Amino acid sequence: MLITIDNVLSDDELGTVHSLIQQSQWASGQLTAGIQAAQVKNNQQLPEDAPHLPALRHLVLNALQRSPLFFTAALPLKILPPFFNRYSGASNTYGFHTDNAMRLVPQQPGTYVRSDVSATLFLSKPQDYDGGVLTIEDTFGTHGVKLQAGSLVVYPSSSIHAVTPVTRGERIACFLFLQSMVRDPGQRRLLYDMDMALLKLRGELGETPPVVQLTGTYHNLLRRWAES
Ligand code: NI
Image 1 (cartoon, helix red, strand yellow):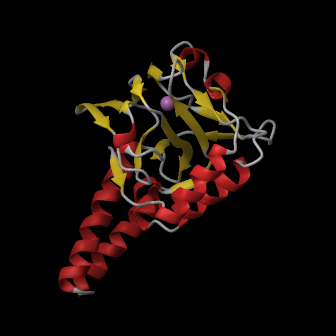
Image 2 (cartoon, helix red, strand yellow):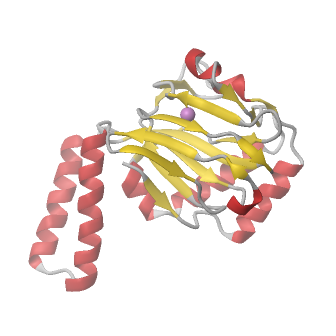
């Protein structure tokens, strides 16, 4: 299931992100890739010791916290600190790969987060670069994703995905992994569909007894499936 969420970052926040990134030095993207992924990964990334990385991470996590849609789509339990990458020039692509299932938490040796959900927050305007399409394969085929600056796509970490070569300009993005309260993507999907339908029903009908009852069913399913 792919879910896109628009305007996760405000224009002001986007401005701050770009100004902090402009003051930063890029390093090789090989830093966070697993063995298979490293063979097809050719981009750049902000290193863990980049001075502005904590501020950038804080800004993005803060924005995600404001988004009820992100919460219901991902049901985040533990979010790994977000990473920032750039595709441009000769470092411009990431071939088909799968994300590592278990990821070390930066600066916390021996602590792992299971990646259930991956997300990409687009930071560059789509008209400022050619290519750079996030291509995700799922059971319904291949999807190409290229969003407005400040918009986010959420997808299962279990999918095979790639970023097509950037042939003009630069594509800067933030990507993150999280462990979901609900491990199974099928169960997450059911909960998301139900929650979105409930939102509409509540808008159309108000808190009628059946709406309250269905809301209870949503929470009881979450109670049954969620780990904390
Ligand atoms: Ni990936």
